[in-house]
Length: 118
Image (cartoon, rainbow, N blue to C red; front, side):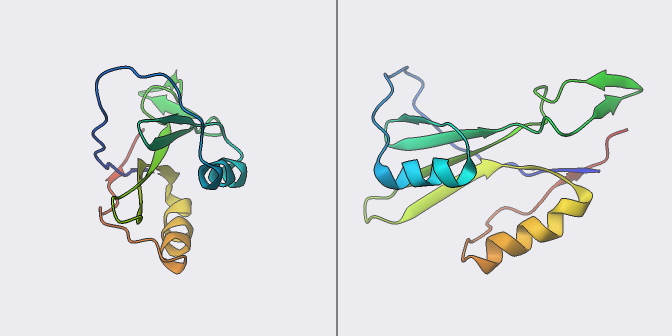
C-alpha cells in the first residue's frame, strides 16, 4: 500500500530564469542530499522513489508515473517558513514519517491519503 499525500501549490505559469539559492535553502538541499530549483522565492525539490517496485495489473510501472514526491519551501511576508509537498510512502513508512514531522514542530495540515495498488 502506498500513501499519496496531496498538497496544492500554485506557482506562476510564466517561466522565469533560475535564481541564486539563499544560504538557508542551500542547507536544506545539503540535508536532503538533493538538488533543487529556486524561482520566484520558492525552492522546489523532487523526491523520486526509485527504490519502489510498482506493478499495476501485473505490469511493471516506472515510478516517475505518479509515484514520486516533491517538497517546496518559501517564506511568508512576515518571515515564517512554509513547506508544502507530496510524499509517496510505503505503509510501513507512514507512522515514522508522520512522527518525525510532528516531533520536529512541523504542522501537518492535510490528512494522509491511502491508495491500495496491486
